[in-house]
Image (cartoon, rainbow, N blue to C red):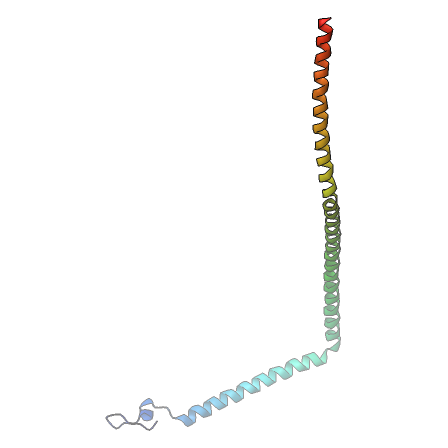
Length: 143
């Protein structure tokens, strides 16, 4: 930034901050940050390395919890599979009975038509028998 304004004063001088101390301060802060981070990491590593029994117990507990959860999900899966199997069996039974009804429908229709014809014949015969009865009644009255 070596530009000058109309008065000939440099901008950097006007701000009063040079780059070199700023970069040096940033590098020092970053270095301290890395030192603190690695120190904390090393402390945590020592604590973990010093207590393998605690780690083993924590792992065993986590493993047992995972096995229990797995068993619970397996149980739920088995229940849902049983329900799905029952539903499929019911659905197949309904489809089968519907198929039988569909097969029987032509024979039912034929039977209905035959019964209608028979009913018409019987009604005709009933009418003829009523006429015969009336004629017989008239014969009996006239005698």
